[in-house]
Length: 177
Image (cartoon, rainbow, N blue to C red; front, side, top):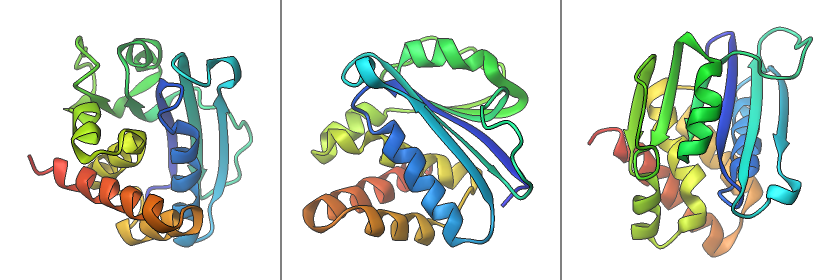
């Protein structure tokens, strides 16, 4: 894993962005000793309004726990893309939902996938962030996939776990399309 990741997961309330950041943090912790800072904005925006969760992963102590310049943005809505795209560094990467983001700027490395329609096709619309993280992880190699699955196993049980593992693995396969 690289020395530092400054990550923003952004979209709409109810898409599981906070849980997605927590799962990614758990997966990172399984792979070694890292410093991690995570925060999110929700509250009145919990369902349908804008929502974001940010995560800093570093091999060195994190002195300021807020993402100022991101090297990875996951944007699941047009509004999230427009709001956070300017924060992505010139060497950064954006993965976005091509079902929702209509006007990508292509200023940095960008990859669009139809996450919303794919999640609906799987019958697990709430798995959109887990699916998108599966795709993003295939592109960026943030954590070993088996560590992310272990993080899922620590968070979910039964049918919900199975649905999320399916969403993650489906997301991983989208990268090959």
